[in-house]
Image 1 (spheres, helix red, strand yellow):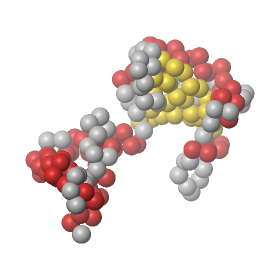
Image 2 (image 1 turned 90 degrees about the vertical axis):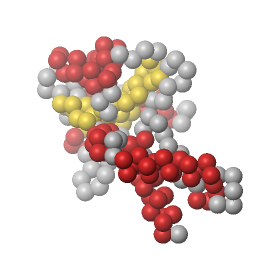
Image 3 (image 1 turned 90 degrees about the horizontal axis):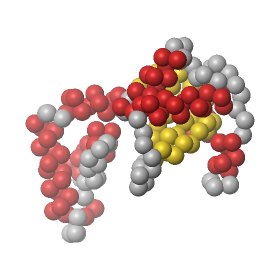
Length: 184
């Protein structure tokens, strides 16, 4: 990765008006996180199958000590020289990313913004489940089950860990565990 990665980021990209950028932040380490921009040309978009990592072209990896909508917009503007103005930008609608894309779009109104489907689905699930008493009880009982069985002969029945930040993006694992445990 260290040998191939920099070459992939640094090789010249074709300037075109049909790029789609996928923008996100890496996991924060200390004070720094990286703004990652991957891209694909619309003409190269796969038909009849999901988009894969191999389909993507690394566009930029920008270390950031502070991420605000203004710093994100500035970094996006800097990257335009590599591919041209993108036709669309896909992001998770975090305040800094969404705000930065909105500022970018003021200067480039032809660029569309799309909400990444996984985050959108998680928001919809959150609105349905967050205040649902049956879901709250299920999540609570799974946490208690984890504490009760993890150091016992029943450790194989330990439910998956709850992730506080992205818990509604990982509901499938907890539901799958419950279905399999009930079947057992």
